[in-house]
Every structure is written in structure tokens, then in C-alpha cells.
Image 1: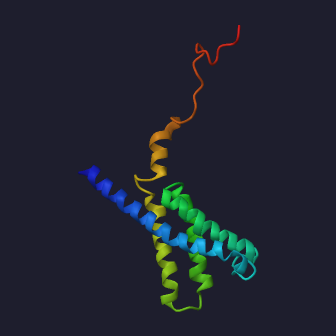
Image 2: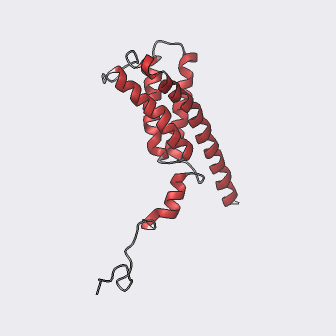
Image 3: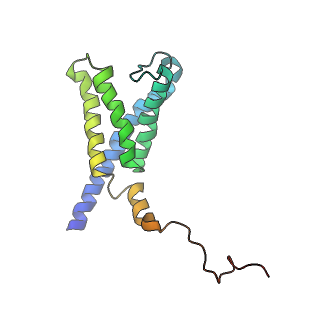
Length: 153
């Protein structure tokens, strides 16, 4: 019973990761396609310059979304995505009505949830931990009697 519950939970997290990652990826690819038009006028909330701010937004929206979809470095990948949504919510759309801010708030809520829950069983993170945890994937030198480590005669 517990295994079934964990499987269902992991399927739900997989659907959430793939769904929200795919939706945000659309925003990132749009910024990639419009890079030359946006580079000089993109909002600069941190004083880094428009071009660098756009590159950071693309990195989060495209790069971190791909990591999220794969379930790779999931908790870490949510952090730039959360920052991007906080900027959208409180800087870009600060003067807008709630119905405009709402989408950024929904994305933020999902990213915070994934930060807290992790990616679930159907993820590269889980595979890495179960297959390579505790140094199992670290290459161990052959024993001293093997041909690999024996000195030439």
C-alpha cells in the first residue's frame, strides 16, 4: 500500500514538473527567439544591465525548466525560477492588477512546492541518489593484484 501511495505521489510530481517546466519553457524560448529585440530594453531589476538581465531570465526560464522536466538538480533549479517569478510579481507587474500578477504567483507557488517536496521517484535526481549514492558510482581502483595496477616487469 505504501509503495502504491509513493508511486502515485511520484507520478503526480512528474506530471507537475513536466507540465510547469514545459509551460515555462515556452516563455524562455520566446525570449531566446526575441533576444536581439529585447536585449537593450529588457527590465533590469538588479542593476546588471538589460542584456545580462535577459540572459539570466532565459537561463532560468529555459535552462532551469529543462532541468525541472528531467528532474535533475530539481531543488536547485527551482531557486532561479522562484527569483524570476518574484521579480515578475513584485517588480515587473507591481502596478498591474491581480489578474495580471496571478500567473507569476501560480508559478511561484508550484516552484516553492517542488523545492519542498523534491522531484519524486521518476527523476534523474532519484536515479542518481539510488544508483550513485554513497559513492557507488565513484570509480574505485582495481585491487593490487589485478593487471591494471601491476607494474610492468
